[in-house]
Image 1 (tube, one colour):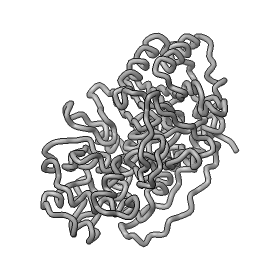
Image 2: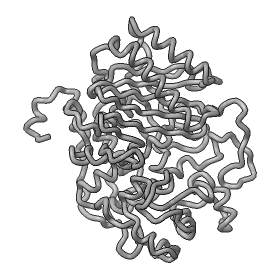
Image 3: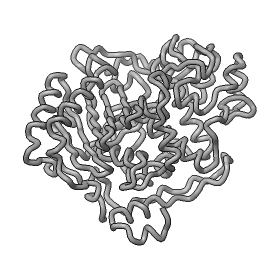
Image 4: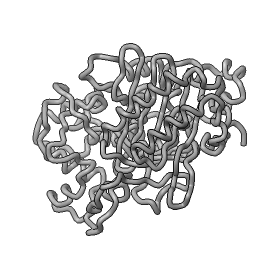
Length: 436
């Protein structure tokens, strides 16, 4: 969008556009200075939205369906956002954000979004490609790869690893499998196997995993890989010369109008002020702490290194701001996108049912896009429908169904859409954040 056109924008869109101004990246050098994060000139959606704003006549029946659904699955709390054609129509919390404190869930609470984080990471990669700093066909390892650290190269024994490309990681086709456990969720085993003194940092983890054989020739098959998205997070850091979280916030999220998304921490005591408490389902047992401290902990608080997941699954945010992010990568004109139309098309291109899209779990030819996420203590679903409606729900409680639970939430969305889509108000709650 040109500066001339910006002059005639509404005050809301003008403040978003001004907040999106960033210094361009100019090279692959690792010596670039990290610029201070610009302060937003508008309030976060999370500071302005309330449950009362979505207490709407005619939607009481939908509320009842959702409350019944949460009770059925023994979920403490959930947050729902509904967007249509880049306008936020509905944002509401259900149940408790923190039951022990009697704190109700509101649209201003942030929650771990698990693998929905991969959609954010993929967008970061597309931003770097548009800046000319990488190509999806770039190789990842070896002297001519992006992650050309000599320690990584020395760990590789299979020549096929030198052919892994950025796009293959995005599509889960890098050759990595979980035959010895998912490296991102088996830190205890890696500490034992490699004789480490503590939980590995990202570089140590990559060096260890690279000594293991691939499960298949890169590009010949696909297997969902959290480790592949950790590598993409490290690629973003290497190419930008900036830590992953800062780069994404300054070049993806803030330009999209999202200023209250963060990399989550591991323990309740480390949670953000407006972050929910997480809960395991009934019958869940205590687990060994990820760093082999000897402590037994709740799976959602210490069994895994959540922060260490980085771009594979560590982001937390509200469904309302997450819907704003989706509006900025969907190709619709109502909200200016943070990536080009060509990048939107590449991320949502459909090949066949067996090929992952870029960042999305699945994109269908009719324009239906899906992104799911599951961790101990949370489940997230982003469902973008062909008619331009996008429904997003994140819970603060696990279920015994694990990743399969999202299919039930998808059915809930379809039921509520059929009964209540026409009753949703014609408005845009995104405008609630403008002002100081």
